[in-house]
Amino acid sequence: MLSLFYRSSKMLPMPTHDSAKILAAQKSLEFIKDGMVVGLGSGSTATHFIQLLGEKVKQGLKVRGIASSKASEDLAASLTIPITDFNICPEIDVTIDGADEVAPGLALIKGGGGALLREKIVASASKRFIIVADSTKVVSHLGAFPLPVEVIPMAAPLVSRKLQALGINPSIRHHSNGEDYITDEGNLILDCKCGTIDDPHKLAASIRQIVGVVEHGLFLNMANLALIASNSEVTELTS
Image (cartoon, one colour):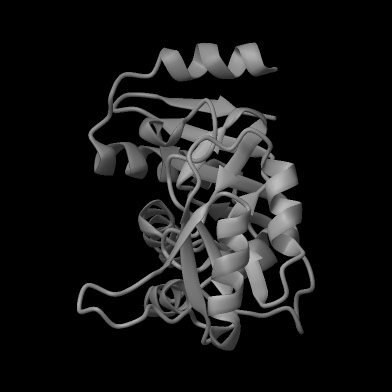
């Protein structure tokens, strides 16, 4: 399967990012059927998907959405996409979301937009989890993109020291005005400069053991399919 991954990624020309994101989002609509509960991801490519889904809803498609962030929920509501929750719908038929890095086996880093906790909750409740991204997100190894770790504010100094002991370099995420970035759940994010992650499963397990960590941005053995777009085509990658 890995050889198929590399052949597909090398054939992709360099994209114009926004047009490629739209192309991937358009392709993902083929997996949405009438009556489905749809997980609505976060980030720029997922935003394109939500906008396109809103057009389909206006044309008569009947779906309900469960959003992975307040921003995605607000966008969906503005487009008249009905919003539901896990009290009413304990399972999602398909979730469409983006990724910051996509490696062989569909190992992912997510959370650049700060919604990693809700994104992982929504993905974990989905029968099918589909990634939409442009071809620049495809990598041979995870780690060039900083790994987000969501932490309880009180524990941030303790968690930071323990992450440093793991050999990764954490720093608290800030807004452009210098204020701390606060997640929808009121937590902080530590962005960790890892370099090449040789063993994502081992790193994920080590981070998970740290008291005060809420969630990390390694999404492993979760995605079923990735739709990777260039300017002119979409390649389907599987694990």
